[in-house]
Length: 156
Image: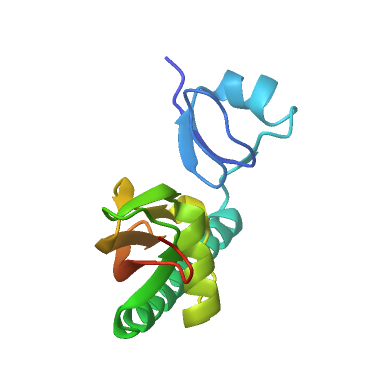
């Protein structure tokens, strides 16, 4: 039985791994398919050092992203109460509803924070009142923004 060889993947390979991973494969698979197709390179000492350096850079980048997200979370939560003016009826029911897009626009105009509407989660809002929106800034960082829905000027 031939021993297995280590290769570093240059492209994702189904059921094997993703780019930059060091994997062990059969020598024939590496020699006849992965290396000629440009999907992998032999795992030499210098290639392994490059992989480690790239992984460290990626780890540092992720740490920076998380720190930036934590800073944005603090900025969003310190803002205080924000308001959205909507047209409403006499009993406080809105004509329409407040959407994630409305909250994103409010954050941009009143707080100066650019947030993608797809990152915002709000409950269904069809009445006047105070609500909370969850803003996902990073996979591990979620900010809570409180806002009040008030009747628009000139509304009933």
